[in-house]
Image (cartoon, rainbow, N blue to C red):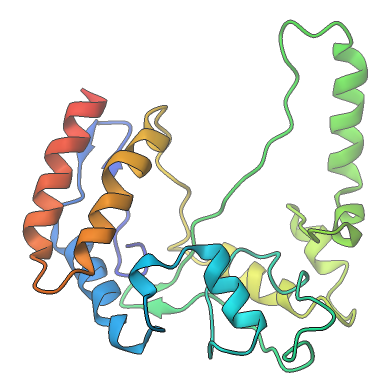
Length: 215
């Protein structure tokens, strides 16, 4: 949706306005549906793990995925040394992605809060160490740049370009977000790829459902 130029994805948490039925959301959903003829057989029932497995087997030409997929390519994959990387695809709104953040936090009821805070400070200052873990994920720009010329980290430059793109925005900051995803967005996308689906009606119905959740 942000690739289509939408600045408020699904809803605006500050105003409570649900935006999912506007023209840019429809353009994004229509584009998503238009890709179905180029997808593998049974794509409507394929989850991310299945798509990842097909790609590693050399049965998909490309996949869009989280930043760790490149580093986790199995050593015995037939495409191990034949993978290229690029920033996220750009639409009318340009390159854009949705950062998926993981957080370290200190519970208020914790009995060793000082030690926990020391650990978080260490993890922040030495975030580059995370690059060499099994996931190969980092969060700081300096950590990405520390591997700029290191073989096996070719995906980092593409990640930075995507994350720095003006269109890249986080998920809406609402406590109901996961409920919206599970009960509204995923079912809507499943219906959208059915033959003859009316995307305008699907988005209108989704708006009504989301409003009932957040209001």
